[in-house]
Length: 161
Length: 149
Image (cartoon, rainbow over all chains, first blue to last red; front, side, top):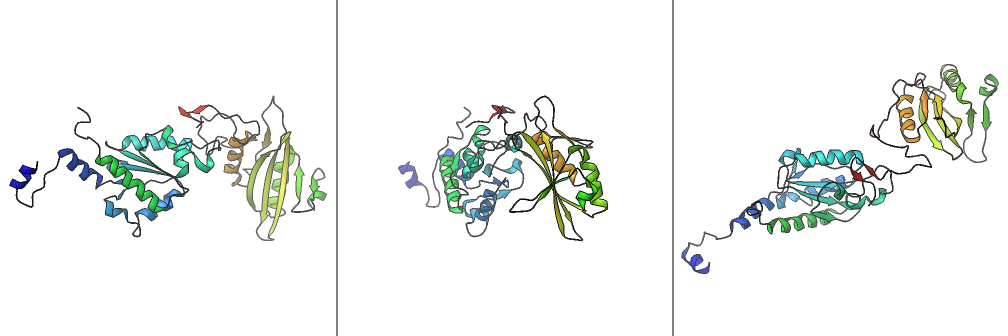
């Protein structure tokens, strides 16, 4: 690699295809504009100018068919869980899920209610859990960075081989 | 004034807070029509039910917007395992009662006789049980999702 590097002009970088693809993917995590409870307010704040998820390449999309990431922001009832699963199924692969806040993690404050799902991981596979009630934008941003680290370490090309 | 007109109504005045009138279940429509047409209680602010253990209670919160007066009516229904508790509907007196009676129906299983569309309001249609009853037992799963952690 080093010998090759010395033969190339300075503006040429060498990398692995996996790394380049992963870098591209993690720098354009489009998340679905979807919130079910008060965590949604904090999610809006995170997408807003002060915390500015745009600098990580994460922008909200209004449809599941254009999004890579689903952030479960809020309490999920059984009735909503069926709809959430349908939204998740509409997202194109590869897709990721962040469980934001106590309610999405385990049912949270409302877990003894007759209608509340005890954690979104009963229905969807979750990549990152963000604790808090609700998590501050900094915590959610940390969750996104953790997810980006995960995406960067994936062997995406050889996944289906 | 209400008690003069309807002798079967009982009044309760607690030491603290507002009092209420207890009405027999079969007379509730008659009383409500009178309250709306003669005494101008034109708003049904809230209709709800409670499970008191030995009996159910349906509570009507009324409001007269001209006189700025509020009134509370209660109907007691004895709890009998063999039959469904039922009250005549007041949805033909105040249209607002329609959804509130459906809500009471799904959460407590109180049947409102004569209601035009008595089915679950917010709970899914295949829901089992009445969640706000004291003897409610949660199902182990709903639609393939476990209800335990």
